[in-house]
Length: 196
Image (cartoon, rainbow, N blue to C red):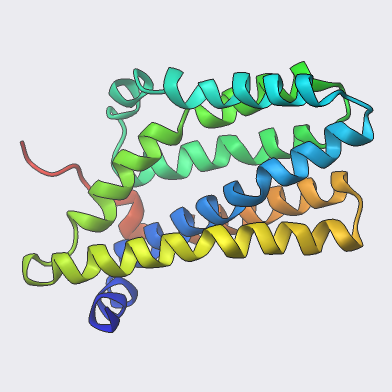
């Protein structure tokens, strides 16, 4: 496992992609919690909150055909573009315009998730040296899994000390910082799809 983490950290493309994907996964883990608190503060009934979240998360399914369109970009460019689009969407979620506003924004944000999963495979798993691929995949999946409890606990703590709107803007700022960092890595911009 540690050998896989070392390979991830030492390879510029793997490191930049890993950091950005981990940020997306960690923020996504706590996003629902903040959205629920935002909608509860707007006195939205639980049924409508559930429907809004369900409609929003349908964007992940609707995003499957987007993979083919996004595949026209280089994988690193695709990953950066999708994450950059999500930054203002997260910021707009802080605007209290009701459950259907939230559903629409979540739908847009989640359209890119299937493409991010393809980029994850292409930029991290397939870029790993053949002899290290299993270790790299295990290390990467472990690091991704760590994002779930960290994201939930972090968002819960954040909501303890700041209003839900400020918490949502904090998520947008963290993602923007991750995109900015990863965008400085020229290797990520130039990463290519594997040969067919």
